[in-house]
Length: 212
Image 1 (cartoon, rainbow, N blue to C red):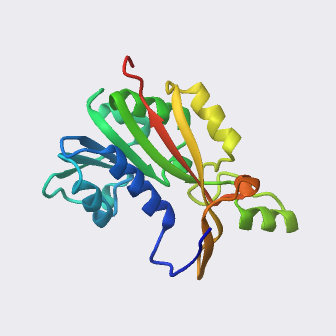
Image 2: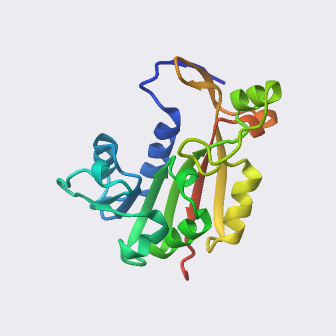
């Protein structure tokens, strides 16, 4: 198991999500990125697909389109007003779900825009990640909403959310154990099974059924 020492310009959670994306996407696919304010990330995704639509909530953060990338300003909770139903092969949302007031509504909207057999990939912080668990052991539990986060999730929260959604097929993977943020990045990429509950992030892979 490898211990990683890295600077703050590397995010393993994004790196892992992109690697997963590359295992699913094809050159003919239509891709959706929710929370698409960083052009360099969208361009990275765009190189692997036929076209990509970036959805950004905040108008002043919405980039101008170029190449095979286009952008729309709008809300994940009303995704079917922005994107045609059953039109997307692969969708991604990196650190967006925790910001959405109606997370169940957002998940169901995501389901609707995916083609049958389509895949959605997302990541989100673990509410009880190691550093947060230690801080709360010494102080008090964080109350939400906090900053821009409406909530954060332990694994059971995510399972309950997905059980209530239209999705029937998903996998939750713990990512990163240790310090991954701020001035210090010292961590394990793969989380030991006994420390799963203290992972920094959850990466979720969802598949829409072929008859969906």
